[in-house]
Image (cartoon, rainbow, N blue to C red; front, side, top):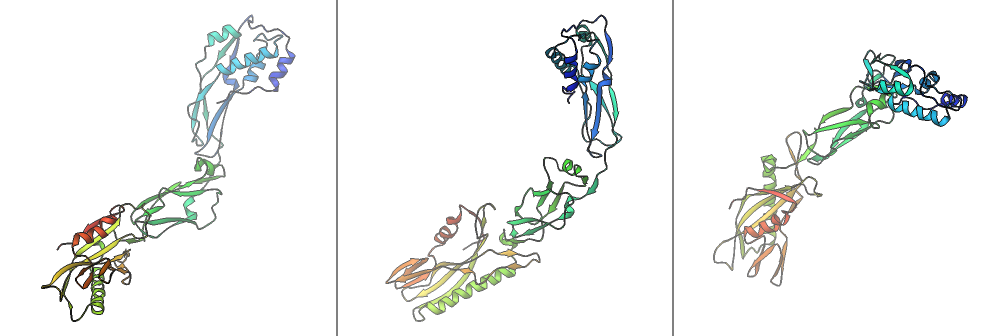
Length: 386
């Protein structure tokens, strides 16, 4: 807290006084320091700020004769002023967040009155000064959150929070910030804070308003979500995907297998692989995979007996809706692709003599190609059993 600052009065006193400084007066003059103390409080009720000042300039001027300043030079006067400034001060026991009717107290610093008397021939009296806060203006209460709408978009766990204005805020310059604005799922708690400068309450008070709240917690809801566990996908949806996958396979058999040399003996679903990103911060366009793994039993004219191989179909970005149903695109199905040219097989295929089949001769090869190859970005669960 400042005491005072040098002004024109001090300068006048220095110019008018004679040119010699005598600090040893014949007798000590009694001075009540409380007479030179001013306390004031400004601001809004409940957020008032108190300050004080000690009028060193007036103190010196009022007691120039007792100080023996007859003939003091301007430089000497400044020295006295600086000495008073460094020695005469104190503090308020409370200076902020004040309301009308609050009682605060100014307490002087520990002043060595004996040395002060010896040096300046002034006997200093002082005491604690009580002060009752009054005159603070009443701010008009308003709620900053009445002027925004919080909505959510996207799919959990990658939902996003949006903040939009829905009215004209009476306090210009307020902004809003969420502690988390993306990577959201239903049930997540998000805190939105109203901000303005370093202290929104003080900022609003400066414009005559008092915010009833400066932050609010919101619970994320209404987001459709990408499936994050296999058992969250409804059984009915799994059946539809399985049936469609088998229909696609059987249609391919009917179209491409040699009726006289090849035959399908059995197609058996042996389980699923389900993959999701390890971390929601990983950039991807595929938020889940649902693999349907099949053991195919076939015969052809070059084999003495039936043989087995492995085939897959998968769907991506399965979405769970609020009503408990599931959204997916049956046409967005991926199956093994391969070919044979003059006996040379390429892609996801293998050959048995003159015949070739899209798929894998063993399950480990299929797993390595489709699961292990994604393990850097995706975690998986499996229900596959032979």
